[in-house]
Length: 275
Image 1 (spheres, rainbow, N blue to C red):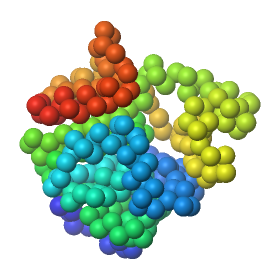
Image 2 (cartoon, rainbow, N blue to C red):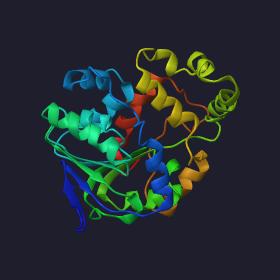
Image 3 (cartoon, helix red, strand yellow):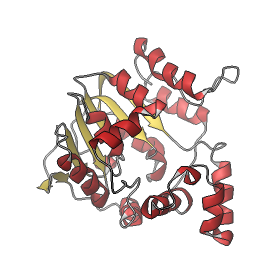
Image 4 (cartoon, rainbow, N blue to C red):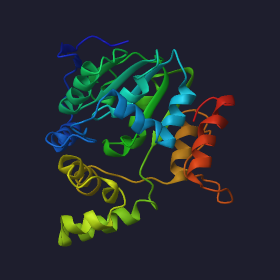
């Protein structure tokens, strides 16, 4: 599955890369890996947190068992670790930031999660064999690469014939409020963001590292783009992947109720090739 050229160090397959954009992003996350773990996190807390999240819990149910899964842009690998817990799925967590992967690897080792491999590489270098995975997850990463569509094409090459690809991207319209908050943050500072960011309002104020990592990721990222629904639909068409579903729905006349549609997001996909 892993192509030659890696160094296996401290439980991580490490490939060399020299792309300047990737290095820029790697340096950006160097001291503030995202998302960061809480000091008390363990196997039980990660599983509970995932089970309480409608999106990831429904995804895990849909995936089932005995699958090969890769998370591209895994960061600190919280999702990868959650998907590995209690299953016999083979997980690959891929990211360009070695420090982030180290946190995920140490967590898996400490909590005896053995069905996950960690790979430090640039997705554009295509270090893994094509057609190797039943599920390819690219959640919140393609818009932070040098070219979102080209990164998507590299990702979809990893899919098996009847595989599924899940893509999470910044939406051009949905991102407007964040951009406005980011502009005001430059002048009003951290107190303003703590008050008006909907995610930060829910984070324990003693979790300083987690708060700083969120602020940095959302408001000061050096490489970021937003995309429209019709643009993404063209990606699927151009790569001959059948689009199944989205959240929010791109159908104006259907409800966007979180609980209902996160469940339907995956259930409706069972009869169709890809989403």
